[in-house]
Image 1 (cartoon, rainbow, N blue to C red):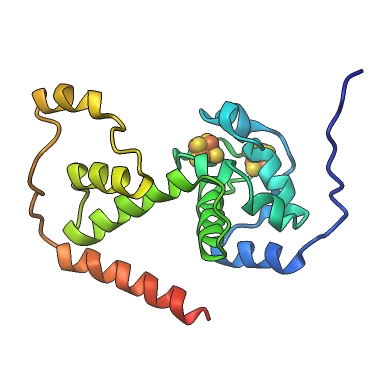
Image 2: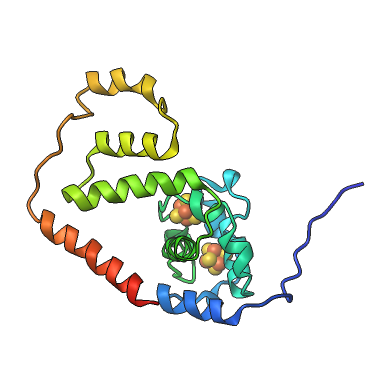
Length: 191
Ligand code: SF4
Ligand code: SF4
């Protein structure tokens, strides 16, 4: 017998969450009419537990825990395919970003290694004003404990001059660091 999983969307509606995402993203999620265009163009949909149009539906019905526990919000690559395809001009990719920020803030992290990769990436950005790939790689390997991740790729990319041992100096490094400080301050003041 075929088992069909259904979700009762009228249960546990978190109205505050709906409002919070609307305010933080600046997007009107109520405009979504479930056409599915976003999911049709999403390159990662096969790895998501909920396709992006279903995330939008869960959002409209205030299913906070289901969304923040989902893998989809961490596996989203922010490619913006969904945003460009949405006939209602909803910035869906930005909503996915906001959901990830809220999940991080409230300690819902379903994909711990993805978060560790983001942590390494952002630390490098803050430190150098742009990404220093070697640092991201080592930072991720140390944080995740996967010490040999991508080690086999090292000689290939080094041979092509794609991986540098020292960071590139850029103008505006301090301004980039200030953007990070301002964000952290805003998050702290959120209480
Ligand atoms: S931004 Fe995320 S959800 Fe949207 S299409 Fe790209 S991977 Fe899929
Ligand atoms: S493309 Fe836009 S309207 Fe269509 S399902 Fe996705 S978010 Fe909703």
